[in-house]
Length: 355
Ligand code: NAD
Ligand code: TYD
Image (tube, rainbow, N blue to C red):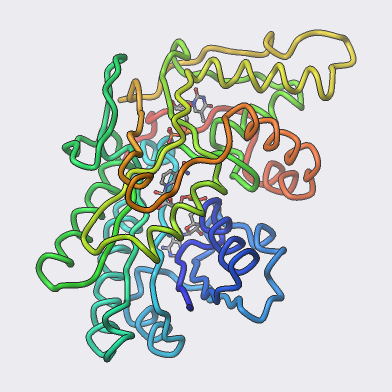
């Protein structure tokens, strides 16, 4: 099988490419514009592999995408390319509408033209897999409620609203044009190669460098954490075996408050690399102004993908977090250039900029 992956130089997309080529020996065509969030170093393990190829391309350019589809002839598309950081969507929503909404529209139209021209088995087995987020479902109260595939959409941020819009477009292209789509909505990912603006790598690297650890509000917001390699396996399972027109919720069954996550990172680092003055890194925790519109809680019911497709998360959060921290400690050549270039150590995104 040959799969065209969009956003394959990003955090989750690179894990998908490494899994497809490295573990499953499947061919991958990676299409990525290489925004600030991309890093070709994340693809080093497979970069020279004969099954792997790369196109630097904006997904908003429908004709260029169609050209790649027609020349590469993939069996499926896994569409991950997106602007993905909530804080950035508050500071500057426009690129989120451009990439996540218009880019998905361009991908759907290119895929539709390509698919219509396919024949026989290639046409019957073609899939467009749209990779989305649990944030489209909005804010859960602090009770035992969970997001189901049938939970109504109620996005809160420009990011989640743009992803919700793209999900609606994907469903419409299935209902109206018959495009064979499948969707997935996943909870917060963590793991190696995550851009250090997201909570876990940001806090890990700030803690290592003795910088303040910004916790929004009281730190009592809850997220459901899934290791990126578990997500990559779920995504390939969905792309290859998911039912047309269906969506699958993917999550880790690992709900934690942000403060608990930050404290766990501090405690891990104190054990692995104690500070010279012997002080605890929890002392670096700094409560800062809350993110505007900050959803209180996300939590996924992933029983559909477990029952139907046999996927289940393989690691506990504690195992995955320990591995992730060890990875950042061992791979400073990956993150040092990013920190030096993009990040001053201050909190990103407060929604304070004028549009
Ligand atoms: P990321 O920001 O790390 O990577 C996004 C990638 O898309 C980058 O390589 C970037 O260069 C590329 N890209 C952006 N705009 C593009 C364009 N116009 N054309 C081509 N490429 C473009 O994101 P991620 O965390 O890997 O997320 C990947 C997908 O998974 C997104 O669709 C996101 O909404 C979804 N998702 C993420 C999470 C999470 O916790 N990170 C959870 C659930 C779902
Ligand atoms: P983030 O990693 O940005 O993912 P998302 O907003 O998609 O859930 O944030 C995870 C949680 O951590 C979210 O509730 C916001 C919070 N957070 C902080 O408290 N401090 C930070 O510096 C960041 C980046 C996030």
